[in-house]
Amino acid sequence: MSDRRYLVKEMFGPTLQGEGAHAGTAVVFLRFAACNLECPGCDTDFSPETAVRMTADQIVARLLELDTGTARRVVVTGGEPTLQWDEDLSLAVRGAGFRVHMESNGTRAPQGKVDWLTVSPKSQYHPASIALADDVPASELKLIVDDATNLEWLDKHAARYRCEHYFLQPWMDGHYDAHLQKAIALIHQRPQWRLSLQTHKIINVP
Ligand code: SF4
Image (cartoon, rainbow, N blue to C red; front, top):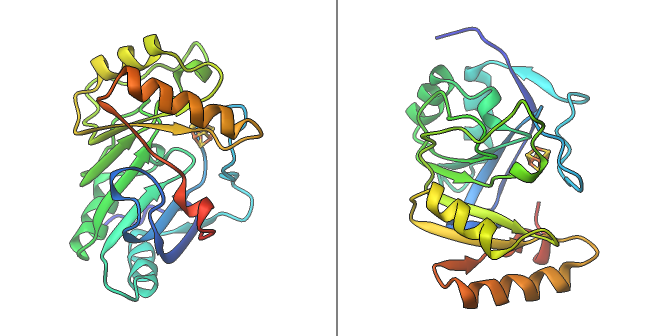
């Protein structure tokens, strides 16, 4: 086992997965610090301040402690979790019986096995040096719907990722109602897409 220390922003649970195909299911969360993008309007605090360095063993021990209902499902997110996820941590977490559900911006393939990969591309906000990675094994694709989202954007990403589920998720900013109506209209034009809401915000759980 490696003695690498991972920069962890927070771990919490048990709670419910709020988004995507597993919305409503019991999970615990592992949120890494750091991201390789700076999307405007990002509402996630992934700064290294207050983050702690933890070994794989410490992470697993805390996950087991949090998972009081023995759901054994962990959502691994960030920031961008692929910056830190590796085979050693995957072996430790999955070896403890957890299914790993990762949420990534799609700029890197995970360097360690995961059981479910949500790709939520933000390529409109990429600096020139960063592109979507090839051969990312997405289980579900989730596109944020905001003022910039259009049919061409949907089609381009649907062609790039062959996966089980295609979700449109209205951005919950000051124009949420307009984004929701736009998402619904887009789904009627491209019915392979489904609506995903941030239900954890609606039911007020972390
Ligand atoms: S990729 Fe996600 S976490 Fe990173 S800046 Fe963009 S919205 Fe925030």
